[in-house]
Amino acid sequence: MSKSRPRVEDPSPRQATVFCGIDVSAATLSVAVQADPEWKLEQRQLANSAAGHRSLMAWLRKRKGLVRVTLEATGVYGMDVALALEEAEGFAVEVLNPKKARDFARSLGRSKTDKTDAAALAEYSRRMKFVAWKRPSREVLELRALGRHITTLTEEHTRLSNRLHAARASRTAPRCVREDLKRSMAGIQKRLVRLRREARGRIEKQAGLRRKWLRLLAMPGIGETSAVQILAELASLDENMTVRQWVAHSGLDPVHETSGTSVHKPSHISRQGNRYLRKALFMPALTAARFDPHLQGFYMQLLDRHKTKLQALTAVARKILHAIYGIFKTDTPYDGAKLFPALAVSITKNPQPTPTY
Image 1 (tube, rainbow, N blue to C red):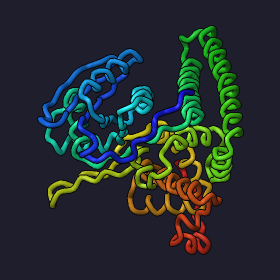
Image 2: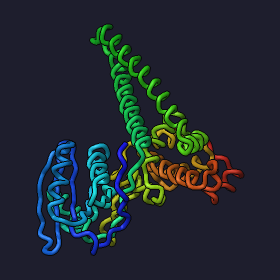
Image 3: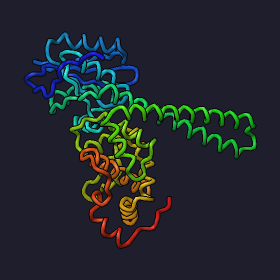
Image 4: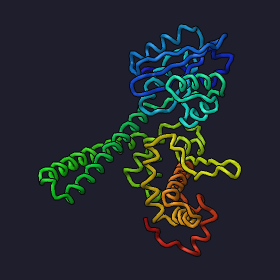
């Protein structure tokens, strides 16, 4: 693997003279640039490909200065362009949480298109404090790709299972359809077994990952499959992120809309973040809310406060993410009493009945 250039940690406005925003999609990069001294906005659309990335860097280098680039965290579509810019000389890269980018664009009062999103990101790059993106290691990126492929295959297996259930209940579905669905499910199951074994092997080779993997497995509700998916997403995050940033990254951060006495909309989560991490936390939340006394007590308290079951499970998932942050930072086992100190005493005196769903 080629050596990357020295990292630009915090270029100030005096150092950076060119500010670029990139709105990333699967096929294209919508690019907006503001450059000193006139700050005139220039825009261009390029292909989201290796050739397009080279054209982007050549176009930006014409301005003869340090280029600060801001783009949203859009998963695989934005990863390659971020890596290309991070490796090249003369570029400083910042990767924003989509919610932060959306809130900034909304503050500018602009309509939402690819061009206006790119222009808003360029404006953010010029006006806001710069936080350099820290490139994950190749091993971590490969584990994340593996974890996401496992998630995709698992979802496909679930869809086929639902179709098989419907075919069995139908009078018109012939036997050959049911048998074909069974064969497809069996094939996916074999692939999942092989891929999970591959993921475990990669985790075992990295001491840091293995230590976190074992901590996850010791938590209530987290089995091997969930541990692979959660670790694959969290391992690529900047170690200096706070727990609030983790929550925002996952899209589990609550959104409240109130204004005076006339506006009071129900609270909901932003969903402006990593859907893979959010999905990976759901099954552990479902299991922990039934079998872990501390998370179960928290879940029942929320139901007593007239939260819906889905809202309560979402809050449990958020608490599990808080717990994971704590055990990773301190390298200590999960302890529900530390997560819910106020609940610990009442749980001992009044154990909760197992909730139903």
